[in-house]
Length: 417
Image (cartoon, rainbow, N blue to C red; front, side, top):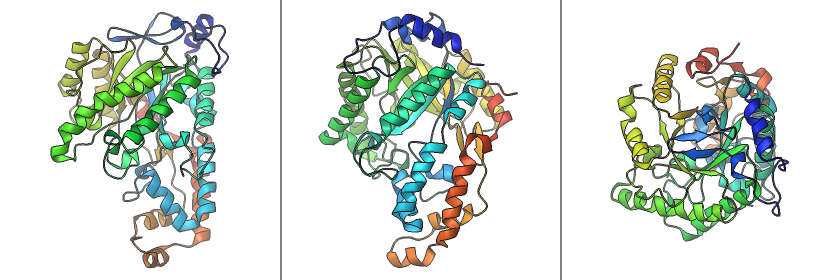
């Protein structure tokens, strides 16, 4: 059921708004935006907003497992594999078609039809630079892609969270941030400057856009793999957050800023100051374990100590029974949620993509030994076959060709006919 009444209130409150604002536009009245009130989010119409929705994962930050890969598990590795398999031009064509088809207006309409009210959009920082990413080496299309999602969400009554899933230098140190296996962001002044510059430009462009609920500064910072360095990395997290908040507030005082904890958005012990901005909220993640309130005691306790909202930005990849029980726990404890992901190969999501007939050849090459030019040549499958498989993957990923996962959707307390 579309949340059109909420969107209508956005435009009543900010009648001068017409999409994404120009640099010269005056800031819209605060009541046009989602705001923070204690542990609650308040929608522009004055009602409490309890986040229910999904993540548009894989679209603007490809992850190997959603293609059926294991070893080839980050965007950089996937692109390298594609270039080795079908050539740079065909790889660039694939990424263009992927971005054009994997998430479209039809997907947002489907999400809204389930009764969801929010989507989280993970993105790679390179979409806002001239670095080599997803087939482009200049004139990246990050703003164009976000503009499309903003428009689709506005038309369908959904709020949007912008999530920097891959930050300059890497904030996690694992495949999910497309890094070089260490969170260099926390040790690199240049990376931090670029990170703040990108958030500043995003804030400047979208400062008057009420469809955007907020900005999530970095996803799942500081993985638990770094031994004696871990305390130092955790201690650096809050100062890096504050730098980005300052960069955003130079342009935008309207939007909420979301802060994730260390170690997969689960450890909030490194945060000591939550009074430096009046529009902060926290975001946790959880996969697996017991679907009980005790399992998130630490999140609840931290939320209560700050007096700010807590939101489960990622959760999923479990049985329908587990997901249903855990949603009940989140609802009972006033922690909104967006499940991960909306769409991927095979299932365990809202929309399942069917494997192309020849897809195994792509998977086999992705998993093969490609440690030398000799190995690449020896293991490369037939080029015509794999180019066809890539085209079929794009075709299968279109909304009309995906398979809605009815029991999954119902398990996360959404609706499907």
